[in-house]
Image (tube, rainbow, N blue to C red; front, side, top):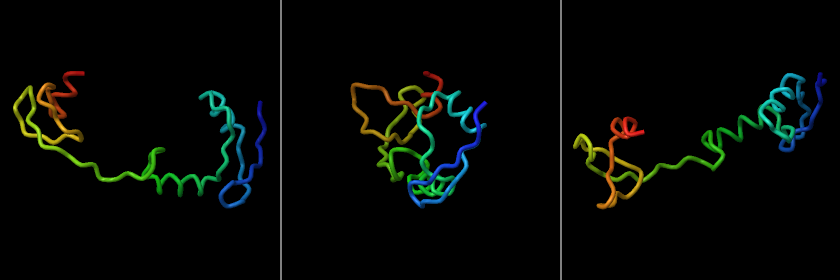
Length: 96
């Protein structure tokens, strides 16, 4: 069984524990790298990014459309094209 490790945060330089159970979790998920940030710096980074890895969440431009299945007015995050049907969220989830 793995033993707890003391690591150094790459952002703030503080020491933090990488517990044996966290190491087991990383191994189970197939993660090959150890964490490089302490819990506080990970949380701060995550909140800056809006909870995603791709960067801060920005408001998307939405486009008006009419559902091809039920005829309900809806909005979609892409410019609808006349050659492709557009569905409201309810009909879309039924299509899947």
